[in-house]
Length: 172
Image 1 (cartoon, rainbow, N blue to C red):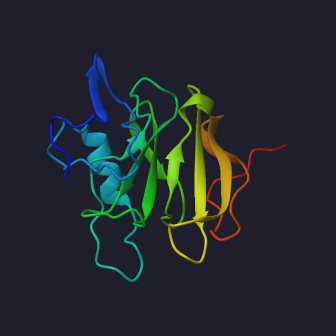
Image 2 (cartoon, helix red, strand yellow):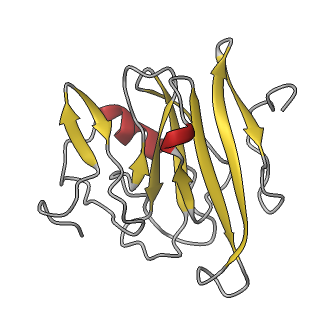
């Protein structure tokens, strides 16, 4: 587990925001930082990872959670995670949990902060090759958008995963 001296993911400055630690395998213990109740609620809504008796960690490993943003996200893995553990995305509107970002958890999801805006969360999904996490089979850049009171998605959804339960953004 991370120690308080490690590069923090959580950073308190006015409203609670997440700052990327730059270490993909860093997982904070659930009590290491002040996690907003909306994030705890979101993780409690995640579907179990099929075939395993794993518990989702409430401490996010990445994200751009912002209670003032139209759309933001946190990424979570399981407790006692390794590099190849599954990752799930939680989507929020104005800090309140909206939905699980993918129908099933996947490995190697990261938020693309530079491509995200107030109403768009850009992510990248990396599909591992047959050797697990050692090499990459494919990468897929996609975005979630909040428009007209609902979530849409756009981009290159990986065929290895079922599409999310949101409509695809027209003309994307």
